[in-house]
Image (cartoon, rainbow, N blue to C red; front, side, top):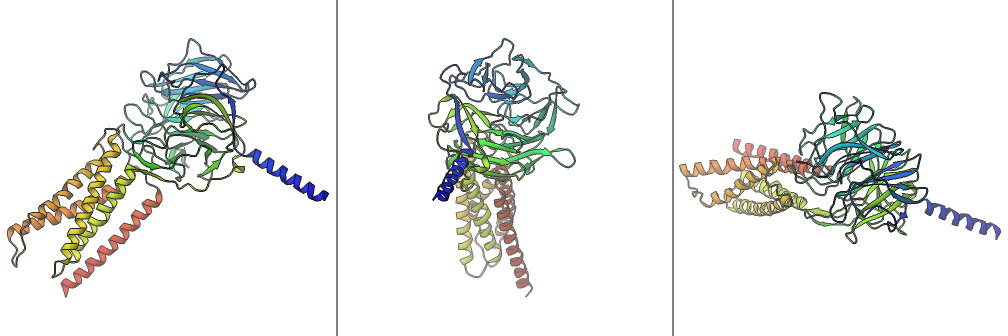
Length: 538
């Protein structure tokens, strides 16, 4: 009897320890007393010796850019205003990070856009602007921008600023060396949306330093600003040094739902894991999507290069939100403010995420519903130009006979394929209409040419001279143009579908399916051509 009682007590104790060790949110300050005003897109830093947080900037409920500085004592649980006369210009959506007794901010949306860098000293509680110079003759200073990602690792002296939006969306990544007080461009901005080894230019994405010289970014908005792509997107990239010592981007697996205005922060040492929380999964470009669960925490492991979706304890959880700011401390990760996805209002509450991610429940799957205009456009264009119009041409080339059956198949396949393509064109226009950037990329220009030629083909077929025992000159001329336009436009459409897959940032399985599909189609064409040559010879 006594043994059973002891076993039960140990079992209950083990359950209690396990549950208590799971990831959970704890409200540190509700913002009701002395606290920063409600805001979004601010910056948050941490000083471990004094165990304090520093908050700067953001945007308030009146859409005003802020320039105030606040200190939060973790020991006392209280905020105090530490705004000084000499301070950075007001801004929001900037890159920030802290190391030792210093907190850094760079770039941001102010009036005008900013590319400056400032240092806050925790000891003197004062700001100073750092020099704007380059570390070498080949580098340059970042263009004014906002919505970038980056930060500084606690064991490093280099602040990363990656991508973002200004006059255009940027491809480049910069590092500010705090010791030498100079900028260095570590990845070039001379890229394009068709480069598979480089992330698309974007803004409003999440980012975190998982190690010294190791930056992970997720999601963001790829459309507009001179580029094209999904907004939001769900791709993950990691920037780190390769074997030659050069900084190199590598694309990681897909998992969390696409989103913008998300927040990332490194888990406490010694892990090389980053937490992704919140964000906005909907936009005018999105047709339908699952919602981000309010108790979901996505964790990226830079060692295994994998995502896992973890579930926090639902009791006492914060409102699901976007545009919050987070910073890593010894006990976990602090989060402040943002936009509530439930009420739509700004917040000024302070939360602590604590617990062991490995002991927290794992959500079932990464595969969730997300369909946007670009996906529908791509599917329709693949079916139209990649399947039905290709098969229609195949029938005309290899299935001719004495009866007119082949022609009926050819006409039906071409007509249906063209109708699908016209529907795909509508979704293409809708996908970029929110950015007002129609036909600015090679993919869209080639697509427009392909569609014009595609629509001319059935029109010139209406006026074709009827065939007779002896082909007339008019018939020969018509056949020359009709056949050769088809031979030109179909390969061009295939190339453009491939370019569109780069623009749409499709996952690797779709690329594999596309290559396999064309391998099968090419095999069919070669086989049909050999059979045709054999019939002619006989």
